[in-house]
Image 1 (cartoon, rainbow, N blue to C red):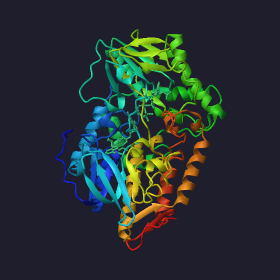
Image 2 (image 1 turned 30 degrees about the vertical axis):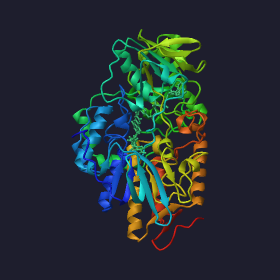
Image 3 (image 1 turned 180 degrees about the vertical axis):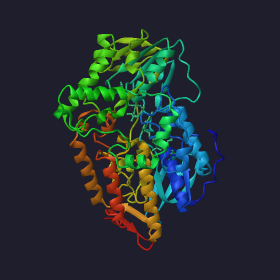
Image 4 (image 1 turned 90 degrees about the horizontal axis):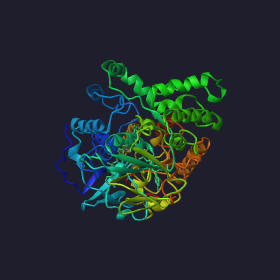
Length: 549
Ligand code: FAD
Ligand code: N01
């Protein structure tokens, strides 16, 4: 198992499929395409596989879906062979797993690392994509699969004076490969999302002091992480196929033991007892305490109130406790966080909290940053400020469709897709976990495998029927976008200024991007559409040109 660079493959002039990205999506896509006998090459900006787990090396980074579930299911051998050391694996172990998979399936020989795709232009006559990279590669591909990731475009806000700061700066999503030692340093952390909530407790153990700049407090549930016991591992491995099948048809791709009762109809003290039980067992499945938490504000309030009281019972300083208790969004409508000792960390004498909602960060200075006229001095600043999520990696590539329109232009008012898999005007271009699919609202491993399998079946269908072109119709796309919106607006999600809504990026359209209809229901829909001859798509054979509607 290695994290070493492979020999760069020779890029052919012409190929069946170009895959962009070598995270878990791109890696599995490559494996499946080889199984179909199609030629494929992967371009990846990083120097190794793993995507998210290659880039996000910040202290404390780990998954919050149990590792027995946050892992590939496609290979029975792999599933049995690999052993996780903790219930929720840390980033180094997940990266080792990605490298183990790359070795086991000999993936690197078709991956060009340190190569960014800069442009892909569709030629409607040849029905092929002309793909270009920053290394000067030019390749003509029948199909493109964008495995570019939903959380792969790290973003530092445009603070005035950004380049004035003389100390070290880091972004959680673009962390150095060499160890970062904060011992004895004064560290500022901007942001209190999932990344910050994982990083702050670990940084605070090292640094002389940590000052956290919080714009919006988040709800966080203790992970209750621990070592993987052989018994627990066996209890999964013995019944893996059944558990995986259940996860695939579940609401979020995670076995959460959902309670099918509404909170609002559950009397006290039974309701609180259920929250206590979920809090004690830990993790994101807290949101499965009742079946109406994302639909009913009154129900959601009971869960939010419960977590706020937990925060206030942990954090000793009442001013900090008040600041840390979220009140401006329903629980779960911003990505719920999972932590190890996050709230407890604020009881340390070396950790301070500054509210930057009432007074935003004015600027960075040579010594630190300024808020409310006061300068805070630091040796290092950590930007835990998130990503241009879901659309950022796609719209940064100059993707030019069959009528000359770029994807960025087409999505100016928000992303538009059919099933989150394809977008009209861009034939033969697939997206893995694209906007309009359950994606970031799910166990991404389950959603990645579902998309890769669907795309593989689709390509097999096209080849088997002597077809070479597929594109959704505008009508099917419009109907899907409307459905995605309708379902989202039937929940509390759109009421939060979240990155799901594009709200973390000034000027980004406010559209709820993922599909909240549920992983199982969505899978069934995709399968049914395929079985119905790819209803809503236009499929063409070599003899006809792609017709505009
Ligand atoms: P990525 O892993 O993001 O890989 C995409 C790759 O594409 C990147 O390596 C990128 O460099 C490359 N790329 C992008 N654009 C280009 C280009 N133009 N040219 C070449 N290469 C390009 N999900 C869960 O389900 N459970 C979790 O517990 C969980 N924890 C997470 C923790 C963190 C810190 C983060 C940031 C995300 C987490 N996620 C989690 C979501 C995570 O992103 C997915 O689980 C999964 O790893 C995504 O895999 P991917 O292959 O789709 O994308
Ligand atoms: O990013 P975020 P993240 N001034 O966008 C703040 C996955 N993930 O990297 O909320 C001041 O959530 C911003 O404030 P606000 C997971 O899906 C999973 O933490 O916009 N503050 C927020 O507090 C997650 O949701 C794990 O008001 C500014 C923070 O920066 C996603 O990745 C771990 C600011 C950004 O939080 C992204 O998480 C890590 C400004 N100008 C990540 N701009 C798991 O454990 C932004 N902020 C599974």
